[in-house]
Amino acid sequence: MLASPSGPHVILLGNHKGGSGKSTLAMHVAIALLKSGHQVTSIDLDYEQRTLTRYFENRRISAMTERHPLDLPDHHCVDDMRERGERWNDSDRIDALSEVLRNVHQSCDFILIDTPGGGSALNLFAHGLADTLITPVNDSFLDLDVIFSMGPTPETMLKPSRYAETVTRAFEARRAINQQEPDWIVVRNRISPLASRNERSVVEALDKLARGGMFRTTSGLVERVVYREFFPLGLTTFDSFETSLLGVKPSMSHVLARLEVRQLITALGLPIKAEEIPAAAAGPETEEPQDVTAMDGDLRQLVQPEQ
Image (tube, rainbow, N blue to C red; front, side):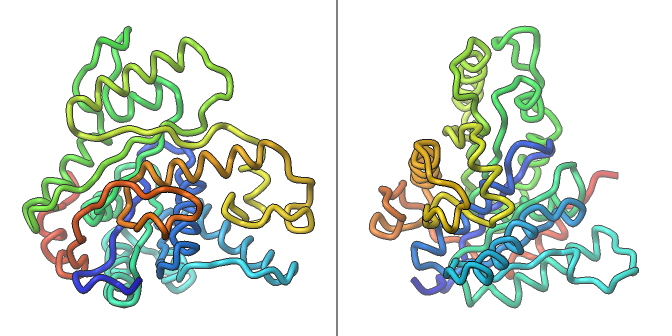
């Protein structure tokens, strides 16, 4: 598939809270798109942790040492775009992100952005670029509190929390520029393999919040050891399960992980045709994205950090 004349589709992984599995999801979405035959540019804005960048570095090393072909996107890390020792602020990082977008917007089908936790101006600006926003949350009311303040019971939904306010502000800026409605998906992630009362309560709370129309929900990845084992090898569920590559004999957990990731890719509803998703059905069609480079200046005006 060639890049759309109006520009690539921007997928952003965002959540103010760390530890929700953003980078693991970002990696699997990127590889799924690559294996579907698309050109993908990935951008790591988490210049402190650099988890996605290290994941791709591990993947590159595995491909070289094992002499096994592994798909890789055109990857960029904000921290690597500056001279060592030079201090950067958020304005500099926004400039660096904008430069990447200008350079790649006609050469790829998808731009995937992994963001850090916290509410920086860089994070706010990046959210305003998203066609699809993926927010992973753990099955915990502490995680839901990042989106909506939680009261003593699931029925006690208070005002939107800081992250929901960030998303609202970024989306309002986006609508003011091109009248497009970004797709916000809250993904239940790192799910316990054992059902519990807490899990049911979290699901009920999320469903109630989703009925408000701000976002939709879907299930993500179960908490499995295999995902932790994939990271140092740079592997995903879409790669070969050969023992020589994995280092261990594949188990039922590997098979189940592959199944749940494919189901997640389908549920995200990215603009991919049915035959393009690796061994999965396509999700709903979405509108063509707008040219992110054309929105850059407007977003800088409309999405300003709070004073």
